[in-house]
Image (cartoon, rainbow, N blue to C red; front, side, top):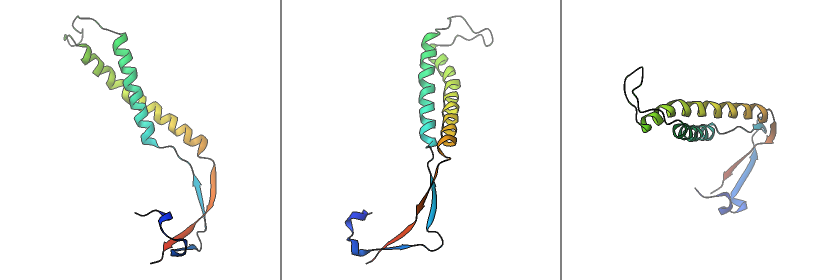
Length: 115
């Protein structure tokens, strides 16, 4: 798709759209980025917790199974990643609440490229 600068100025036709010449624009956080950062934070916290708490080499009192350190990391990861995503999404909602109240009015211009 060619950029606007590739077309000469006389080839572009600008007109204001009747009835919708003003639009409201507000900023909003990108929730996918916040979710990815929360998941990454959860993985980092899980790695810290898995190395800080070695556990024991004795069987679990509930399942009578000995869990390896990688299995313990996986179990901790199952709690930390959703918690990190939840905290990041709450931060995104608070950010949207704080910044989203500012609404700007902008003029809408419809441009077409003349052949």
